[in-house]
Image (tube, rainbow, N blue to C red; front, side, top):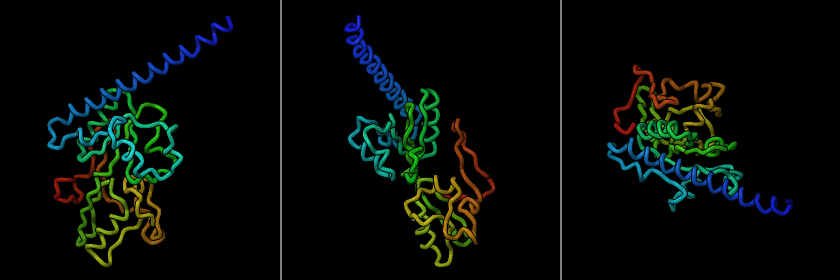
Length: 228
């Protein structure tokens, strides 16, 4: 009986592993198809913004902004899908499809998440990488700017400097920090004592909730660019 038991276990394990792999592949396929269906009327082909392990660019896109190399090892859980949206509608579609197929979403901007929370999960998940959402519109006359969450604070500083030699913004010193994570986390920087945190200087924000709804203060200044 002992020899029979020892021979059965690897067989059962192999079956279980195969079942889990097939389930993940099916979930991935359904999620991608859901995105394509929901974004079919958008002028941008959503398929060009989707990366799965079958894509040759998947690894380079995944590794691009990982700052903590502990989470770049083969043993680190990988996303079933990486989406690099160009429009708010793409993010809304990702939320809808993740809810439908039971996937978690990890949102990444600059990648300075040293705990890996923006690109690691123990359950099936998708990364929404905001690298393409990085427009910055500066109104120097009114001392306001509208910044997309995928921009880095270095890019924000640069665009402000293009418009004014006297204006600035209180945020961090690491220029590759993503605006989305830095500002939402407070935004500690060298101008803190006089001007407060970056978050203290935010007068409006466009937010997408867990159901895909979009909210912001309608009375605040908005740039006219259709890309925002």
